[in-house]
Amino acid sequence: MAIHTEPLAIHGGRKTKTAPFGTGNRFGLEEAKELLEALDQNTLFYHFGSKVKTFLRNFNHLYSLKHSVAASSGTAAIHIALGAAGVTEGDEVITSPITDQGTVIGILYQNAIPVFADLEPYSFNLDPASIEKSITSRTKAIIAVHLAGVPCRMDAIMKIAEQHGLVVIEDCAQSYLAEYNGRLTGTIGHFGCFSTNDFKHISTGDGGMVAVNDEDEEVYRRAHAFADKNYSRLEETVTRKIASLAPNYRMTELQGAVGIAQLKKLPAICGRRTELGDRLTGMIHDIKGVIPQEIPLNSVSTYWFYMFRLDLEAFTCSRKEFSDALAEEGIPNQPGYIPEVLYRQPLFSERSAYPGTHYPFSLGRPNYEAGSCPIAERILETAVKLPMSEFYTDLDVEEIAKAIRKVALFYQK
Image 1 (cartoon, one colour):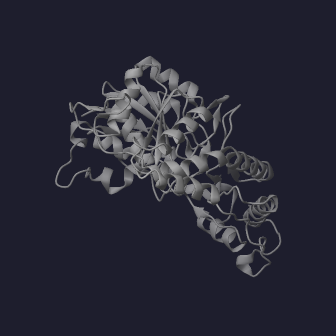
Image 2 (spheres, one colour):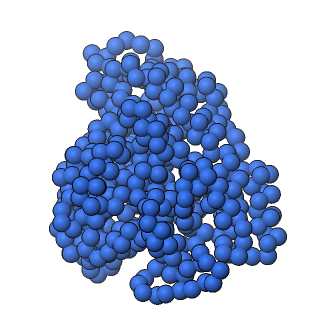
């Protein structure tokens, strides 16, 4: 029997959130100044201009990197890392089933096979034990996706990779300046891949970066050439040796210019998101049936969005009813994150990467059946996703927490 509480807005009660959420401008005169300077160069090609080079230099300084490579997107950044790592036909790459398709596109372009490991139930990130069970003689790499700004358990993942001779690529599209055990995500694996599309912490419209953490200078050279059709532009004399396929994933000077200005704002953006997200967790962690995303010990999330799970056994409602009621309280949200685990999309369930063939899936025997990653599937069935913004006020977060508590108390058994 439900606990008696004040009427929900969906039943005609008073809304919890009536004032508008805090907003702000992501772009301003700083970006405009950099763009005008880029145009004044009379070239928008990264090798002849200064903006992409400056952007990367500043990025390297922020992350204490020796080398990074600019890319046209976060998807391209992951493909560059895979290409530089030597991932090729028939190799297997282990990754998360709850991620954007951009994580796996590069795997398939290299004619390799995505393999999905299951997730931890409360961090929503890769379970190291499931990774280990997924390794075969074909396994070449692991792509660790730091979902929503929460870092994966990288110590365990790196230990597994070292034991099996695997390359680790961190997908940091959602985890700018997040920390795992005192280290920034993107600096722990062999490669760290970032996105600057319009829906990330910072934006250049589209774009990306590859942090090259491998100490072998040749790996950096391979990554740089792979992003630029096999051109080598690191010395005064430009050369090109076409020994294998390499795409054109170059960043333009316009993207680099906006990136310079955006990067200066990144520490404040991430700091505020961490503050707000942690505060929200502190306000709702004691609510029966509401389970915030778990952050590893001694680690920092930068909350690209905020997601929690519902223990539906504790409620008289469905996840959809909870989500609908929360929305009526004035709190934007969506049930789940992506509609279903990635391996249940037709691309995988029908093995249809290329029209008219099952290649490269036919090179192996990947398991894309329903139920193959049961925890990941259950996460998507029970999660509720909230937008997060550095422009939110303290009151916004307090009212989000109040609304979650109100709905939870109304439907609690």
